[in-house]
Length: 441
Image 1 (spheres, rainbow, N blue to C red):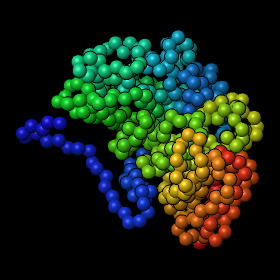
Image 2: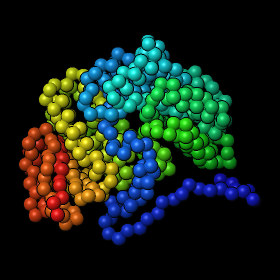
Image 3: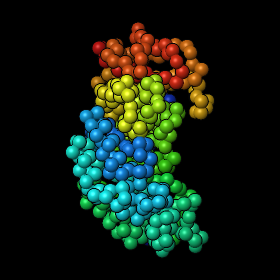
Image 4: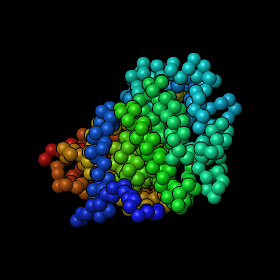
């Protein structure tokens, strides 16, 4: 970055903190708490941390009106407050969704009566409608892919990855185009939620400045400016940021968004390890964690998936159309439990327990989270991984007296609280249990 005589340059604000004791978890929570004010001043509907449904892992890029109507009819009255139409709503016939983004014209094949009819169905079932965009990138089958004068360049050539290119967010034409396509769509159809995906990396930077890095900084400043414009024109819009491998979870971007997808590890057993790590990076109230439910899932697996979401924000997806009554019972109880702990997720302090996890894949051992709310009530989430057969015990923090008021799992679990020590004796590997603790003194 070159600053000429008489010029000035202001960096984004830095967040600094100190603490005595508590280690990395205490100092991390002091740092992430800097965003509490922004979240408290965010959309009013976000203050209760509503439960979400995203249809991506149900339709897998085929969000037709018919598919969405079937899903909405199935999940009505299940406690979901947001319904997000994910990638593919714009795709042209015969083109995969991940090659076609950038033009953003509603697919007449998927929505023969128009997207407005689908939005009406979602709202009629008392859910806020959401929609997906990948704002900064364009796919190789989109007409926008050929608009080279408006795309980023590096070394004089269009910056191209395997199947994507990138808008030059510094250009006013690009800002105007995206205003029409993104903000225009949000307003036209009355969307109240936008998921902003980002499935590629620009890398070292781009042309157009004194260095590749400065070009990258300028482009990301343009991206932030567009988000600010979205928020200015639709103030109560709920914004979901994309983790993008972690590089968009930095504080400035997170201060603009209600939450972020924590990872694309939606279907993996490793979800709870990643999700608990993120307590050190972003607020749990901003960490959207997916429970992808499949009709082939055991009850144990469904409870495990739902317990994952207790580490942050609860979002459900998956094959919900053909679940059995027993599977729905575990899912329903998980949603109910989440709503009881939502205030503690929103405002609380996290304490981690368990041995070091040496490898995420086929993880061995266990992990535990105790999160204590502002009023002293708490909840505990245990995940038992492979090769862990012994009883698990933790000493609860804060020297408070608690009583167990609810235990969530797929089966009745042997959970005991005595003299401030909470113990669980798991009988199976890859199992989860959650406990609500009421402070009595």
